[in-house]
Length: 460
Image 1 (spheres, helix red, strand yellow):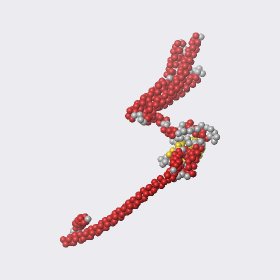
Image 2 (cartoon, helix red, strand yellow):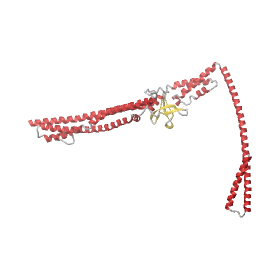
Image 3 (cartoon, one colour):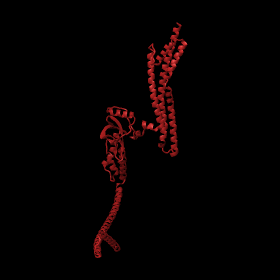
Image 4 (cartoon, one colour):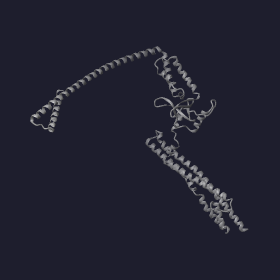
């Protein structure tokens, strides 16, 4: 400590000397005596300041030493207190074990009986807590859980509470009842009408729409009703609507989930139409594009052929030809060649009919080709999907079927899309071809009649 103080004093003296030198340079002394006086004065001031700092440092050191001693004293006291409490805890634990042993001896056979009662209370409390009926009667399991966790002998009232709750659960399981309660994700936290079908299924009536709900445990461990995000098919919802609107004594078809929720919850994992199309990959999108283009074109051709057929039917009732329909143009060709012989006229009419045939059959080959290509594209998607599946099996094995689900979905969905595209295109092609052949048949019949009439006139 003394060596440190000497070093500190020397450093301070050097600082004073440097400071004195700086002042001397800015204000030069008039003589050597004046310079000596300045140095001595600065040295005395620096020494006094160093002494003051030394005293403050020593005082701070003493205070810190006192605080350290006080902290050690408090630590020692707390350690003694902790040892005493630990000894007291061990003594209490020993006394508790002795009392437990004495209690078991005094209980005798009743101890096992009441142990079974507590076990039954705990098991039935878990059943009641997970039952949909608790949505209508919340808190039924609290007394049973308290009894199951109790270390004292149950009273007669507590034992009666077990079998009474069992009977109450059995009675409520046979009821179909509507009550108001809160449902997470529906009604903005307000109570909504809720219909319970025994312990099997529950659905709500929000804005006159029936929606199924699930009785589930949330992240905090509390049970409650939650709106089912993916509702089941329309026939299930229709059954719920019929049940909600039925009279009290009316028997209607309804929905019952024997698993009490998990089966309905599966529908959230059932992919929709968009997800199905996405699973089919690029091949599926090509098939859908081909279907749209071909169907639009085929419907357009059906409309044109229907209009042509109507125009031809109207032209049959007229004696003068017109350029607005095929039969009218054939009649105009007859007018141009009626002065010639029968063979020439027949050739002219055949030429006019042949000129109309490409117009009537325009696009039919494309529809036929599209109907044949769609299943082939589906087969292509099936092959590529199976290649993906076998590649995943090679890399990851067959332990997890979900790994192979992507390739299998693509394989199956492309086949389905190919068939879905081919079936309507075949119908459109068949109808369009039938309409075109009908018009052609009318043209041929009318042309044959014109030739026969011309031949009769020539012979007559």
